[in-house]
Length: 258
Length: 374
Image (cartoon, rainbow over all chains, first blue to last red):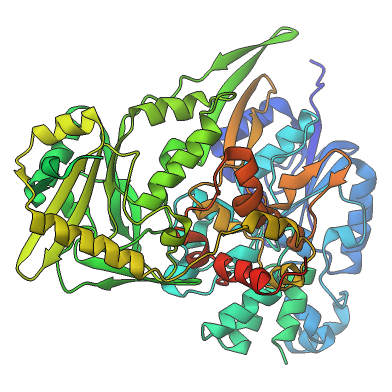
């Protein structure tokens, strides 16, 4: 039987595999996905690895080594549509914390033979090196958003991915604002929606896992959190999470580093 | 309005009696209750689920609950929820469509026929509901879901006997006394010697329910005390907004430096519009299944503070936070008057309390009033 289904490939650069697991975690939808696409390359899930070209490629992970750069360029050549998934691929991930430090010093401490380690100075998002068609945020990505993006590209429509604040969804859920009602510092007002406002739903402040929203006023939020009694150091740490190297969070964290 | 002779007085048992009567008639009874150290609106079974003996302390960007020194049932002001979450739900499926060959079939979703009884609606909120009536049930456009829910809703208003620090209904002429738009209204009087509720009916349905519970005619003294409490709330508003000439003032000051000042503080997070009981903006989203054969159309609350909201073919006409804040405030306080005949603000203070950085609409207006450019 001839297979006319679009070919999907899932690639990994420097990352923890959590976003790839979100695909496998979409249990209820996974069979439907398998019915609609041919998963041609997904080493995390299957040893069947077909060569490119692919119709849709998903990349997890940041670019941290010269090898990652080469791989990313090859993936771009192999994929008609390329979507980066997760905070590593879209912002450099938690490993971008090293971007403020000397990586050579780290390798000397960690590895017995640092001369075998070939690494870039910084951990960067994939889109810094190649053209990416869509960036799906999150640490990890939300499985419903991931399915939505795949469905959108299969059906030639715009994905239903909003870029507004976490607060909008939080309020729509009927959550109580942890910042106003409890005084808990929260990155929700400057963070992009998509997680389902998980942390405020469990009475915790938002950690900013989905990165900056479309018009983040980090300056105003940080000043307010400081006025509520948070230390400069803790404010710096709040912005240095999984999306630390996204520009708005990076700049704000640097203001509070001094 | 009732004449003074028909004003009744009841005790807490009668309030419970009213709630159980409404439940027996199939109403879902919703009212204020405590959750996550906040007074929110949710389904309640009886008066024991009300925030008895609690009150709230509100300021710009600040909300805390506090114990009262009595067992008042309604001794607090409005919280982050408003009744719009029931009449205009945050997420609503409008219809489904299924592919049928080269065409498609629409499957309409039945309108919601839930009968809600709202217990503890404040005067500002009655005004907010009446404002949303003009949006969703006007001479030209009728939202079938809203109309269906609204027509079935039974409203028990509660007159405010205290005002919060972010309240300004008195200056908006929307409270604190409920004047119309309710089936029953209650004024709670509590002091060390007595605890009673002065009740008036505002509709035949309200009269009917009231006739089925134990009531007494209110004495002049009881009515006097209840009125005095409401008057006290009116005198103790934490905020005020001068509305004289506000439409022209704002429209003539579209480039006032205050807009830049507020834009530097505004998070564009949209919390103010989510908690506002009159904000009605929404977006529709088509959700496909993976085959592309089945689509659902969902309506969701949206906000003029979200960047996507003003994105149209060819670009975005409100990219700056300044333009978005200005749009919200001038619509609420000025162009709303042209559109619907009233202000869009009822002075409930939610946008002030629930703004994470405490932006205060009354202060922003005053800054322009004190120093107009035009």
